[in-house]
Image (tube, rainbow, N blue to C red; front, top):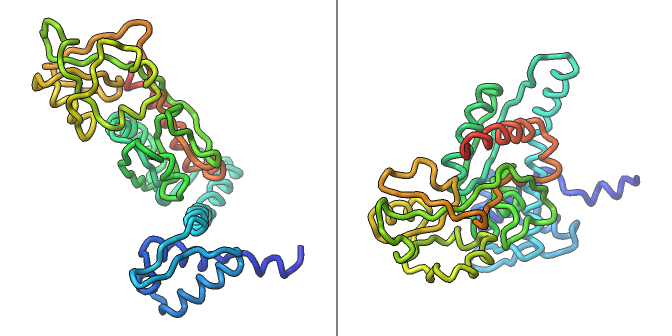
Length: 306
């Protein structure tokens, strides 16, 4: 390969500048965050645009806004920088394995995006086991609503190393990511204890539930009225139903630790289910830290729904 080809590659410091400009929405703010001058940041961005062959930011009085090309470039920049960060850890892990060490020495941050019920009831057990085996790992968890691009979008954009996502929903996993199901959870009818006709109650729902691929089942249920109450999340739904304000159809993970004032009724053999799994990039899936987390997630997934 000729030396000229390497001249077109973006160096790590150029990638960091792109990420900073996108994050700060301006050259001056990015310069301050990086400890550089504004002219240095502008020069770096122009050089990156020249190498890539596309305009990455729209400049204006209000700052710098990424173009569609810029959004894609910054997402890749974040993911590449994450691999740079993991390089030393991966090398040490390989060295320890080749020396027949009893455990890999893993250190550094591990960024995780999860929707609320997964973060509350699936993730803690996995992280407890992970930290016990690898105390040098520092989990960084972000709670993300599982609507739109959801947790998978966080991974695709380079904000997370792994996302706990609903798999098989109306929004497919981005093609550049890999995914695997951890658990298949059933839905149940939830209503106040002792109500003589719970199906006559108003329906309480929340936005994330509507994104589920149970929509076909939902449409076929003549007894289910349109939602009359919209709550912020599944925890609020439980609170409202517990207070006698209605009924709800909810996945089992959301019902972990449900109050005694609620009755949970099986919907029968045709009940819908929800697939909960993980998403990550092919590159990060091969890193020791992400592999270790996936192992613990698989172990933890055997517990909450037993």
